[in-house]
Length: 256
Image (cartoon, rainbow, N blue to C red; front, side):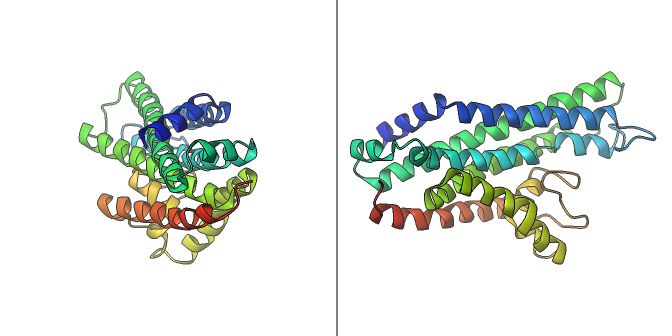
């Protein structure tokens, strides 16, 4: 298992797609938080950083969480896109072990996405607040809680992305499915019922990261978030559920 994990980590480190997705997550988070911070204050589009505006900026990690799941998709689908799956399974005939290694490394990569996103949002938000002479409106414990939410959500969504990619196999198809669910199906379902919204994966993830509105995907107003532990369990169950299908089908299907 250790050898399989090392192999997957090497693939991630040497794949330009992984670096590109992480750079996109960092760049988008920096852009959004920078714009929100610059436009905050009296008469601005965002509440003052001396109050609720700081929370809005620090929790603008939603797009990074989406890309964390896309990253997980690429961990699984790159094997089929570049036709290296046959070599991988010849090196390690135990397909379940290979899938387990991909889930573990995908989750570890998702941690990096969560850490990078929350670090950028925090640095930008606090820098603007300090530059404007505002006292920090949030305690250190609260900011740590939001950061932990983004990091845990990033890891679990990435693991779910590995399962989705292993099941669909087509990289383009799996990525389209992620965005279609996030910006289409989930938005419709959350708009129909505020009781359902907290249980939807991306909405639950962004709420766990402290978001209240204006994120990607958009969080409906008036939605009550689930407790941290409940969301963690929900996302972990999602990742486990998505893992069941490919774990059973990949073992039986022809890789070539």
